[in-house]
Length: 256
Image 1 (cartoon, one colour):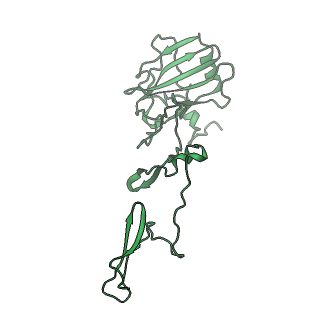
Image 2 (cartoon, rainbow, N blue to C red; image 1 turned 180 degrees about the vertical axis):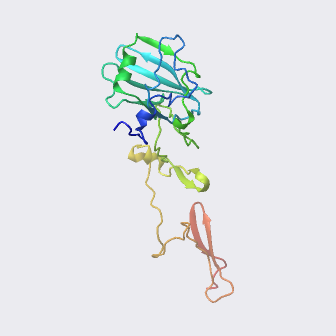
Image 3 (cartoon, rainbow, N blue to C red; image 1 turned 30 degrees about the vertical axis):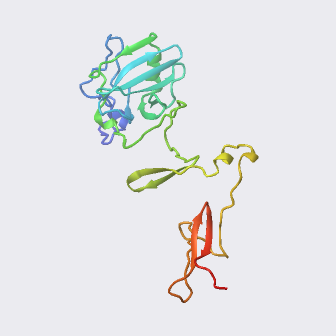
C-alpha cells in the first residue's frame, strides 16, 4: 500500500533522526575532532548518580585493548559514573550499565551491538568531550532522593551502603526515637570480668534477689522495705542500710 501512513512509529525509528537522548545543541564531537557520535548511535538513556546534578554529559570515551569505557560526568560537580563493556563482545542487547566509583548502580545507556563495536574499533586512547558537545536532555536524569546518611566507611576502610544494622555491644544500648533519632545509652557491663573471659577465680557471679516470699520487685526492679505499725500510730521497728546490709532493729528496750 503506497499510500499507507504510520501514525505511531516505533520509538527507535522515531528517534533515529534526532539527537535524543542528547540536547538539540549537542555537536557530538570530541575535543580532537576524531570521534563523531552519530545521531542514532544512542537510542535512550537514564541516569541517577548519587550526588550528581541534572546537567550530565559524556566526558570521556576510553578505548582499551580489552574494554571500552564511557564516562558520564556532572557539569557543576565532581560526580562521575562509568559504563564498561568488552571490546570483543559488546552487549547483545546494546545496554551499557553505569556505576559510580563505589560500585553503586547509576544508570544505563542504550545503543546497538554494532554501534558499540564501532567504538571498540577506534585507536586505543582516551577521547575527551566538552559539556556542551554531549549534554544529555534533562528528562533522562532522575534526581536521587538523598536525605540523611547514604553510606558509611568504618575504620577498616570498606564502603558500606544499603541496609546497615547498628548493634549495641559491651554495655551500649541503641533505640529508635521519634523524628528518626537514634538514642545511644552507655550503661556498662555489670559482669565485665566474665565478659572479658577472665579466669573463673578472678570474679564471683553475683546472685541477684528475685523475690521476697514470692513477691517480685516493682516495675523499676526495686524492693521497698520499710517499718510500719500494725494498728498503731507509731512503731519501735526501724529498718536502715549499714555497710551494704539491711538492718532491722528496734528502739528502746523491754523492761523485762
